[in-house]
Length: 98
Image 1 (cartoon, rainbow, N blue to C red):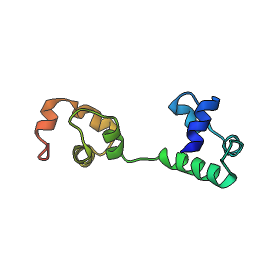
Image 2: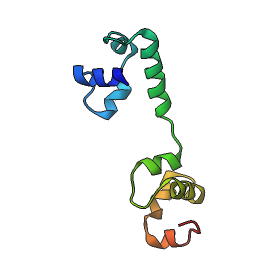
Image 3: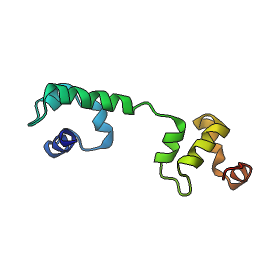
Image 4: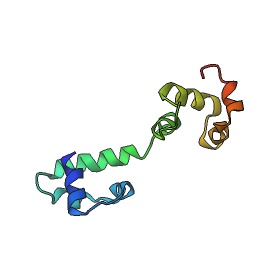
């Protein structure tokens, strides 16, 4: 975590999207950040790019959509295109778990 704060302080990143543009060589050059730590951070960032629809819906922070509701929406609609249409109360009323 220290490496991310340091990268922010130095100006390597200024937006969340720039996290994914960081290079291992940039990170390993930071104070208190070795090759292994930089490699682990790059791998963790790469892994964070892939997520499930349920997790994605949950982290959007939609009011009244917690982890359980997000998983229910995923089971009901299956993909993001179909889930976009679930915004109306009409669709949500017919889901047992909501």
